[in-house]
Image (cartoon, rainbow, N blue to C red; front, side, top):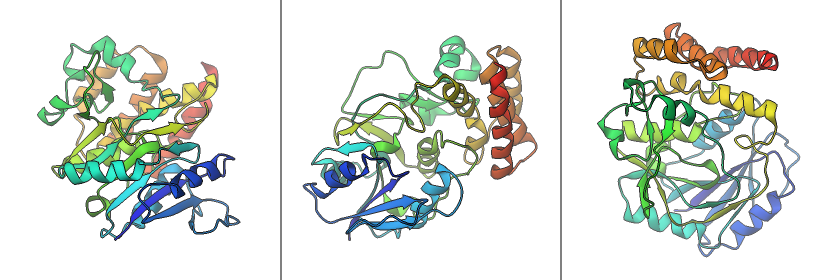
Length: 305
């Protein structure tokens, strides 16, 4: 048995640093797998999977298709991330000790992504809309609301292990036997919440998702699919992240009437557009790739704001 480490990459200059860090791991029996769109990649002792079409969610699904189920562990990181020397070993030890946790994130240094729906959570946190989707999420610091948003509790005491949907793909581990036949819906342009979708799949099957204080990764740079200093991209990320209820509905059914009632209260323009699109996708049973086209159309309209 071995451990597979997947890195979806656009060929950033930092990729070689990421690979070098993996080669220096205290745990040696691992296979590094790059998912690339350019088939000119040649790196010694690194397996290459060429992504012929699609966006980031398609890259994740390619990785999931390459899980056999007999691996010891599956790991994901980014091409601008530097895992600590014990990163693999820390994740493996964590999963050995926590049999019921199917997906986990370790500690991350560097610029964090912004969870835009938290603004609505703060505004409406005492309403029915922002209650946990079910009792399952009562222990989660990052949890699913009844309207299908992933939000973060405030002023939470830090613990070594905390249940959470706020899994980060730059530092993510999966139990292979649980995810070997899974595919995530391909409905966004930048892959927002792909990790949350994976976490929800595991919760649906009776497992948990968690973050823990270990397995350190240094996430370099300022710009990525989920992090930006570009105001135009930030507007789009805000839009995309509010379409999550559409993706959630494939796993946990969303109460359409409750979401409609919530939309009657929401005045924030971009979040409202995202939520309206999510509701439309659910009600009209729009397939993920068609939903993505509608999302792209709304992206072009954001220039008006």
